[in-house]
Image (tube, rainbow, N blue to C red; front, side, top):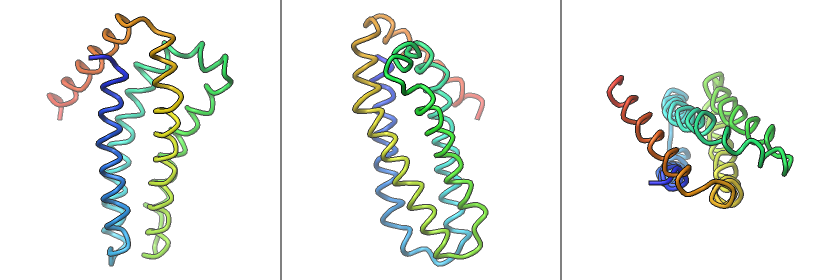
Length: 149
């Protein structure tokens, strides 16, 4: 399996989660409910972003530099974390709901950019064997995380 296929599969899981969060958020009655959902999202997104940063962005760094997007993609990962951390600081239900939905919308935009720009760029810039080796590294990393959990 190529790294692009593995990361896209993770994106599909996230898109489903985002759909659920968007549907559920208006019905939340307490800040605690919203914070719990935000904490799960933050944890999952952090693992995904760390994997992308560690395995994927490095081999493509020269491509990001060429299109002037390297710092932008790293900043987006940090901004996704910050958006969800703001939910944890919230004290009112309406505010927490708005912050959570903003975090979901921002995450969707970031994933869309990766799917439209980064994954196709990787397919063009990296050899198929490299993509498969990175896919194996992704699987090894996921297996190690599962064992450690």
